[in-house]
Length: 101
Image 1 (cartoon, rainbow, N blue to C red):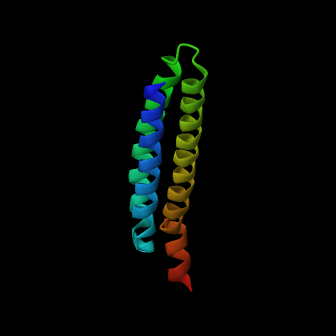
Image 2 (image 1 turned 180 degrees about the vertical axis):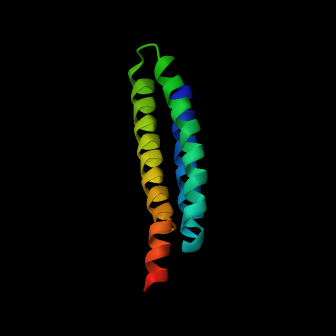
């Protein structure tokens, strides 16, 4: 039970630190931060899967691992959509349309 308490403290402090850092980032840096967040979320997915596998049917650990996996997947998928949208802005079709105008 002590491990669960420590893990929840780390989650709480990490969430508050992340909220503070993201709130102070100018909008022009959000896209590079998204790619970094995707890399970190990939590591989080591996850690969550490890926690799920090693939970030994302990419900709190299984639940925490599942929630972490869900949030990490949400972040990675959202990051891919944002990256795809950003890259479509720089495709050759949009450049040719601007030249033809």
